[in-house]
Image 1 (cartoon, rainbow, N blue to C red):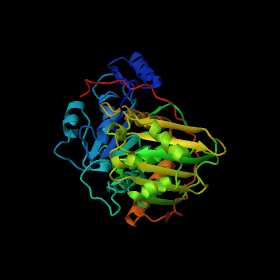
Image 2: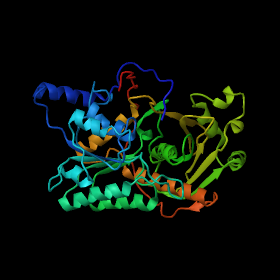
Image 3: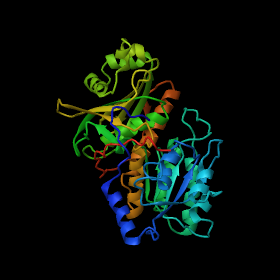
Image 4: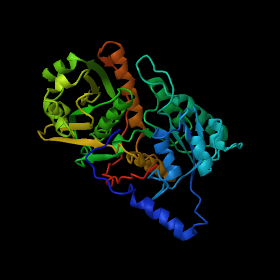
Length: 425
């Protein structure tokens, strides 16, 4: 993921509360007697440079800047399990350099080779590795299998600790719902999701809580399974604040090629909202090439999502013309349009991942998720349904199973500006 047009200085600045806590620990305990931090087990597919595992779990090892300098999470890595060990693996070297053990099973990572659960939380990061794709084109990361082994350890130990699952709960609805239900059964504090709902927005706006949102239009880029999930979570974090909370999705449809431009001309999504998303882009590549938007996008994709309460959301993937995530929305009965660009930090230390770690740390401390896992359950299901619509030739797909109902108390706030760490290694 990328970031542009944001100034960089020296090091990434984390929240004042974390910094103050670190300072207080040093003053109270002294450098030789640090306060015991919650112990976290890392469970991942692969651990290589710039992988999600490194930029999430790696922050517990090397700090928020990923260079052994500056502020650190109030958590410590107790163990690490990797499902695969590619040639560019760095976990074994880091194990020697930083003194954490590599375990040969998920159970050992959680028990530290003892007879009982011996950690205070679990970070499950499965976003890279050599795995097959499903018939719908979604990469089949072993999230159900890995979480299943975590859950078995909890059950045999008689207790559970907080778990964070990076990005979607699983690549298909059946497995995602299984993970969610299993966590509920064992009373596991569970969070999941991508960084899009928690990172920087320009301008710094959010949907009004308890308002009636009529329509949302969003622009995305990149692969449909990986980056498309980001776009869906961007939309969902806006939609979930509407009056009545979330009530689920009635149907979805996948369109591509000329069908996208025909849908635009037919007004199947608001032209005003679409123009607002384009106005938030950092650059309009088609204008730089002196082409039309249609000429610049070889294979446009339109995702149409109809919610059970009447809200409509349209997400356009416009590879070749855009390289940002933007969204625009309109409230019922109002002419005013709101819009924003959701901005990531493409370069190390990939500061947007810090906010996931901070949310997880909050859950470890309180036992309560910092944002609703139902958001990710629903977006996991929407993505699977959209890719199924694609597989079926772009038909409208009714989704009665996506009757996911929840309310969100999460309030987004603009994070501090990211600060470059050119020395990050």
